[in-house]
Length: 466
Ligand code: CTP
Image (cartoon, rainbow, N blue to C red; front, side, top):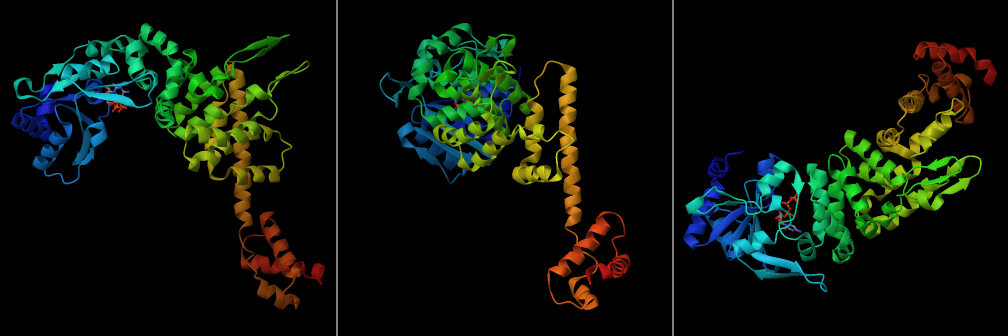
């Protein structure tokens, strides 16, 4: 394991913090995610410093010692933070914090170091490193957090019902950590999450959405999505996604579970792209399949118009989830067009159909094709190869049309002025027609793209236009 003492001692701000605490005769600790990520060797974010005493006073004294001018104080929450060089240092006084049954606001009470650590969410987040003179750099692990890190286990320090009742957002945090770190959940934790899923209703939409998107950003989002679904939490926070679950069989036609398919599509996108909005679009692409589902005796299950309906739902979903409207058009477009490339596979497709697709999809063409490829979840390798090569065909057509369109932008080497002079005509439609005829001859490869050949060609066709 990492040598904490060495790591902490090397950081100037920890040493200064320790001296300030000594002068103020209070105890301070590095706690929470920083310690966890230090052990996991993950990228380190902000440093949380727990102050057994007044966190604001301590932050003020330390900032003065470090020569930091700008400090933010959040008096209502008893927290403060400032940047020292590019390190984000956060300070909080030791406390207990819990949501009562009725209130949407947590009740905060001043507490001891023990009180504070006991009321934290997961054992892996209860770890603390002392910054106090007598045991500087010592790891304090009251709930076996290090062991749980080794076991890759998310577990609450107290009875999970109590921990979740204190702050129901922790249900989502548990799933998020499992997804981010690829950890398992303790069984009693999962039971409590299932039982208390409805308690999430008291949590603000912003906090819920933030955790949901952290799941989408994780290396394999399906880990978190499936936990949300299996625990019934998805029904509370994202009912449309929960509705994708379930299979049905009629005659010989088996209806695939759209939720599991969607999870796979999201994972496929995640394996090739960090763009969380593309991942979200993948999550949304079949969202309107349930209400458009019909059974046709001959062809089986159909979902006509699910892409149109789904894209129309996006505005409402963005509003409810408090998502940034700047991303609405992007997601809406990908949902609406996700079947379009398939329609363009046939050999009979005209250039203008391809051109229309290029114009509608605009700069998001690559993302669209990434989503389409990710949408192939067949277990049959032959089918997968065929579908993939179909998309290649579409992309070839797109490239081809784009290339030719670029050529079309060029100008005839013989200009309008000269045409008018030679043909002895005023500015008119005819000038344009003659120019186009010359350009077409170049595009068709009849003559080269240069003045001499273009002029000769013009003289040759002169009779046709007089
Ligand atoms: N915490 C908690 N309950 C919450 C939120 C936070 O007990 N609902 C505690 C945890 O001990 C956590 C610490 O506060 O480690 C800091 O919280 P935060 O910065 O939100 O999370 P991190 O664990 O640092 O992880 P991340 O930065 O990935 O969100």
